[in-house]
Length: 248
Image 1 (cartoon, rainbow, N blue to C red):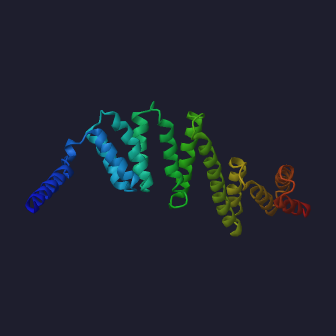
Image 2 (tube, helix red, strand yellow):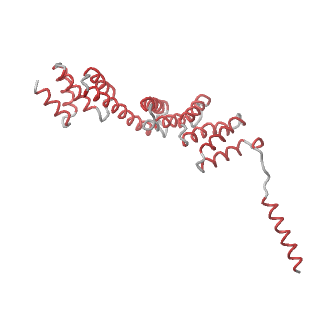
């Protein structure tokens, strides 16, 4: 009996081992769907680089499958999550060029804008990133005004405008402190001409009044003071402008 139980145990063990052994599938034998699922699993595990590489493999090895189109966009998203923004943008540009009528095309434009947007505070080229993000988000709201991404794109554009205006104000103040009045005036005027809905507009108008007063251009100073006071009567900058022109 003991010998029988030993043999039975061995048979059960061998059967369990046999059932747990799964056939190994080589990469070249994997279907497009298998590769896509593998890539998606990498993405869920936050292995973004592996996910991007595997999504790219779907496109390269199965270019005519339905999974290839999906993979282009998912590859871009994986690169974005990995903060490989240039690679993400390149993937998105390829998707946009090859699939302009795809149901996810609005998202492709939106994600491209987000790739630029996320570089505004982290890149040395943040001003170019701001402008690229602004242009791309503008494409979203112009081309896809009814899409679910339009509202957020518009909100981000407003933040970008304020950021760009703030940059011009910083440069203008630098020139003003160094008594480079014309250069400073050009920067402040750029804000009053192009960023009228931003939080920077009140100070920009005041700085124009200030510089015109310094340069002895009284009429121009009064003109800008009237615009500031008329539009922002309770602003501290309006009160400062009024006191400046009153001295003239």
